Image (cartoon, rainbow, N blue to C red; front, top):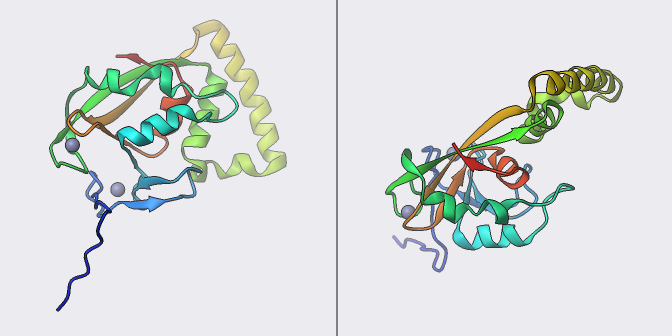
Amino acid sequence: MVRVVQTGKDEYNCPKKCGPLKYGRSLHILQKTTHCKKCKGIMLTENDVKEWERKGMGPRGNKLRKNNLFELLKSGTNGTLDCPKCSRRMKEIHLRYKKTRLMSRQEDVMKDPGKHVIEFIPLIGNLVRMVQTTVDLAGDLTQGKLEKSVTIDGCDACLIFWLDQGEIIQITGNDLTLK
Ligand SMILES: [Zn+2]
Ligand SMILES: [Zn+2]
């Protein structure tokens, strides 16, 4: 029996144990990435990160370069997931950022569009949004912005990052600080 070996292409496995990662476009991310079809996590290599840093992401720009993931990785603590490339334990980087209630709600929708179907029905969606916007603005005024957090994983040997579903939106759209 002849085993067909794909040369020049690395095989990576999902650190969440879903199986091999796929390279290509997905419904959730417009750019080609190495990702897991099952848990929708994505893997970013050093080159991917540099490429993403160069590209603008959405109307509010891209904060990836400013956030400097490689620098943040140095402050990571021992995590629980294995690196998709070298299988060593990755580091966990605990980050936080501030966001208004309204922006935070929009971010949640972008992170997982499937969960928020009702807001996409135009008429009902508009009403829901109007009420929420008023409540959100009042909340920001009285209690200040929300304190949000995101934890990403990275391998400091391979310079690879693993992002769970939607975390790419959080790390490109916010000014992150270490927790
Ligand atoms: Zn997975
Ligand atoms: Zn590694």
